[in-house]
Image (cartoon, rainbow, N blue to C red; front, side):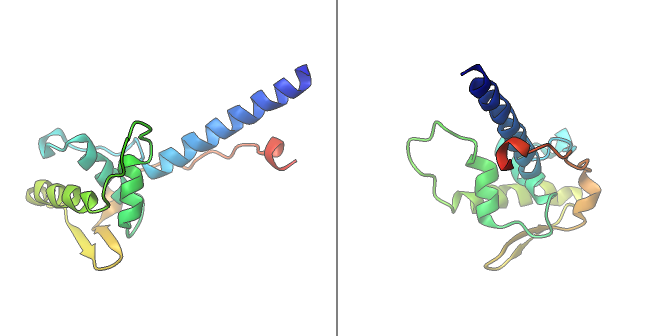
Length: 131
C-alpha cells in the first residue's frame, strides 16, 4: 500500500509541474509591463498572452483571463475579451505599442519579441505517466 501511495504522490507532483509549465506558457511572468501604461490585471494578462504567439485567438485570451478561475458561478461571455482588448489597445497606443485585429482569427502584437523573453521550459520526467 505504501508503494502505491508513493507512486501516486510522485504522479501528482509530476502533474503539478506540468500544469505550472502550461500556465507559464499561457501567461508568462517575465514580461515587463511599464507601470505608466496603467493596465489592470485583465489587460496585463492579455498583453502577456500576446507576447507568446504571432496571432492570439479570442479563445486563447479567454483562457488566459478566466481559465484559472474556479469561483465562477456562471459563464462569462466570450465578447468580454473584445472589451478588454479594446481598452488595452487604447492604453498602450500612446506608448507606440501596436495591437492589430486579425478578422475571424484573433489579435497580433507587432514587434512582440521586444516586450519580453521567456526562458525555455525545462523538461520533466513523465515516466510515471507513460510507463
